[in-house]
Image (cartoon, rainbow, N blue to C red; front, top):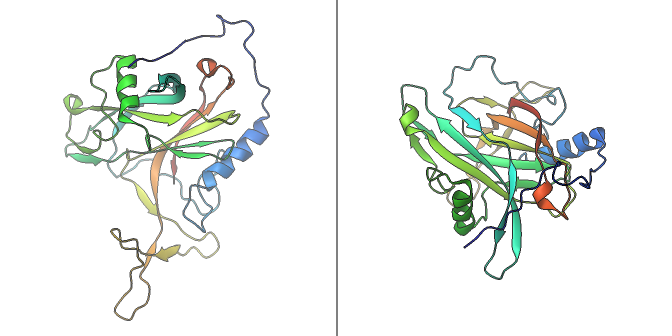
Length: 260
């Protein structure tokens, strides 16, 4: 098992191609990508615009719910040499969560990546454990937990901190910007309301085991309100080219909490 990585910075390659980007187009495409992540029929996911769309509540300025201390490293690319000798490129983003409350908290990470080409990717989904092991060796962090191993109860204190990683494939499209949404680090939830009536938006409930619609004694569908969760949104510019993935960068644009 080996990793073929060739770190190259702008100073190492004066001929680095710089892509011309149109900010308004990037924002509109990424806003569309974010909206696609909502349940069918809803279109109120926070976008990259300054103001949240109508109907989306704002996070509390001072939350009364639990939260985990969350720190992270900016995304980088790395190459994994597959069994057939071909190389596949991935983005990876390491992070750490610490429980600073007085009670155990169950941590279930939910990490989604949206880009300006309309791609919506769930980090770590479909990623081989071999890729994770190669990455852990590359970053030289024996404390890095696998995506399957990091969920669970986190007890209070730094000694019980958990270190994880988000991994997703480098897109085969010309991506100029992307946003990473980290869910599972806040306990704050709110009911999504219709911006016109102010009433909660209701959807049919389903059986979590079978996926079938739930019904009451009269055979009518059981309706439940749509809830949004507080998540950390981190937006990046992504200069670089598909021809040289090792030169791709993630330049921080904005970081804030949103409801989604």
